Length: 295
Length: 303
Image (tube, rainbow over all chains, first blue to last red):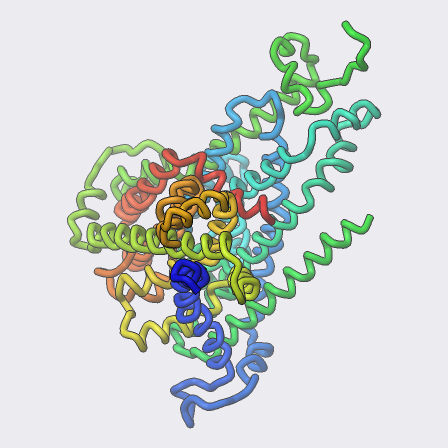
């Protein structure tokens, strides 16, 4: 084999080597090690770190605080799917209208909150949502004649506050996804439907929605995964877990267990449970969208 | 008028594009009403999007007593730049140091992430080799597993190799970006094989083909990845919060969150920190908006 042939055969491995070396050390090893850790007791337990099988997972199943975190996070996920995603779709439909002016400007403006750090946004929202001196209560809630809402201090408003923040932050990027999907729908379909006398609603239901399915699948998947990873916003907005743990999310719980209680095994078990939950939800919704495809 | 059937172009927005000019005068009242409603709704959305930013920016020029005084006002009663001078003076937090930290981490992580992803993307796109499929699938699986599952073992790893509280503890794990590899593979597919073969005939090494033939051709894709990496690195919170342990090593989001946690009274100063942290992002966002949009939608298009 000539030198040139040899280096050509070797080249692809050298090209991918830096990535896979990093991947093995900073991704593969932690993923395997995390599972191993989750099957062990803690360093400070009587007897030290020992093999305990799936005990951490069993404890998790009966851990009320974990249930609470799961319920809160699921509330946020439902908020994402049923508040943020539909709002984004409506905005995308509006931005897709042919006679609309300043389309680019609107699109950029709505996207703006998405490029700013979640941490900075959470800090901004501490003031925005303040009960007495916040902009929302002062300029929106009170002028409507309602009592000022204790966004950050009342347990029942904690998750709605986070969903509101999520709406503000993620509606732009999601409407951008939908807009790309809408612009990929061939105009001829609408023209043909108009010839058949179809109205706006029928076109939306029979053309737009079905053809938007792939984008919808993507948007909902990202929304679900993002929801279950929620951390920076509650951690900063509530300076912890909120009144009565009302802003406790799965990730905040993992963080607390790992870096405040130093229960690495238990925290690793939370991490793996999270992966399983996300995997199940992803498969479920592939099924849901797949079912649509049948008709 | 010719015999072609006349499509009711007011029905579908897109169908109108060609005839929109001169149509305004002929709009009926309901159509005008609908248009007004849509504009008003979009402008309301615009106001809602802008308000927290404007509120924060203006609050950063207020005194603390002004921020927490009824009735609440947008415009500062007394304009002051004390918040900024206090923040930058470093008496409360080493803000300038944290700004520099953020720059180091962001530049390092972006550079490394882009270089690694370009190399791997080129390898995957332009060569056939044993194990290619399985390795690419492995890369894609990474996209499915949330990063969070690795934080506990990754933290322990950092402790073991003595990287805790160093720049590399944030830079290196963050530079292993499977999405970047995927993106660059798709981008590198566009590089024509003929061009590479021509280079081989001239005796160029494979790395030179990558560096001098392929890379210049995919500058746009590289820019998109660099931009996304920049945003990730500059804005990241969870991992730097775990890996960086002392205020002198914090990046801006961590420093700012700590400031807001410890000094819940100094809101003027916190807001000025929020402004200074956001400003670089906004400038980059404005300058690169078109690249950014194509980058952000790259995932959706392929999904």
